[in-house]
Length: 141
View 1 (cartoon, helix red, strand yellow):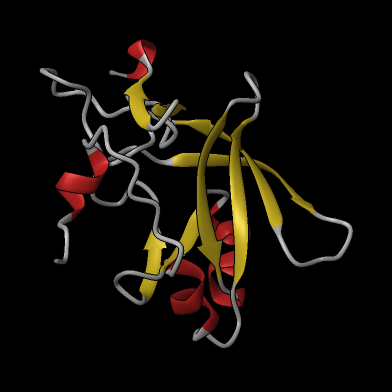
View 2 (tube, rainbow, N blue to C red):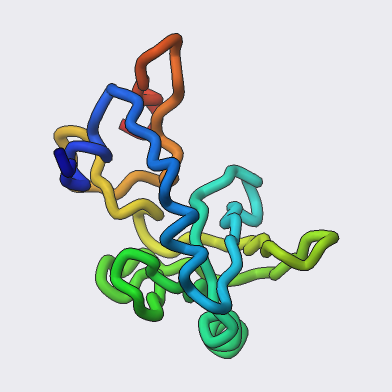
């Protein structure tokens, strides 16, 4: 049975998608990019980037990614207003992944909302594994 995003995003059940990289591998030129808060050093999200998205990120000084779900360039914040101002781009030793150091603009980073609030979560990593279940981290819920 196919689950919808809401079921996955708000679930306390572990439902890891071990097939995601198969989908990403079909895209000819793409790299993973870890997005980290430039000041707090908290990891905010993991995304993917194409050469075009990297060029656009540098040009706009904002995080631009490639949406593997929608198969299109994605300027983070264009819909939500939650842009990520790009402070620095780092490249790993093997030159096969990137690290974006960013400053979030507005109330959040993740497209999901805090429980009972109309606020976006500050990070996409808002749950942790506790034994065999997912547990929401109170700070982000």
